[in-house]
Image (cartoon, rainbow, N blue to C red; front, side):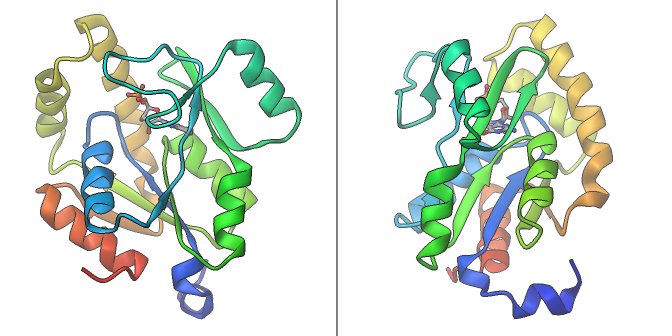
Length: 195
Ligand code: 5GP
């Protein structure tokens, strides 16, 4: 999208996609953004992976069976979907996002790079934001530090992360997740939310 097209679009009603490599801190930045803007619509994804301890169906994700996921895709109810880390499928239910945009409110998706590409094709006016780590070493440190994946899973996620970092040029904006506060403020600015 050109700058002219971007600036003529109704900026508050645009769809913003936040993507970036594993463990870069997308979830933390989105949590902080929601704290600052409790009314902001953030899409709840459907996934075939099992809930982790503390995760609640309908809050963190819609946890669905393989069959249910197949049927959501077959009936065109997914705006995008992807097999993430070669393990489980994740997708954005189209209806709630469209409803929000139709009434002129902004919407935010936190998804992987493959999903972001699909959103770009389906909704070329969307704003694609890449959340990048300050450095590769820092990304490795964050993944190990969060302790939710065993070492095999960490290896798999870092392999995905390398290819995801290569996609940075496809995005409209890059936000470096140096500190949660600064990355959130930058995302607020890009979305026209004000602080
Ligand atoms: P986790 O299993 O750690 O919750 O998420 C793994 C990855 O799935 C994250 O990188 C996240 O961005 C991605 N993801 C979550 N929801 C969606 C979605 O709806 N679509 C796509 N394409 N990726 C998603």
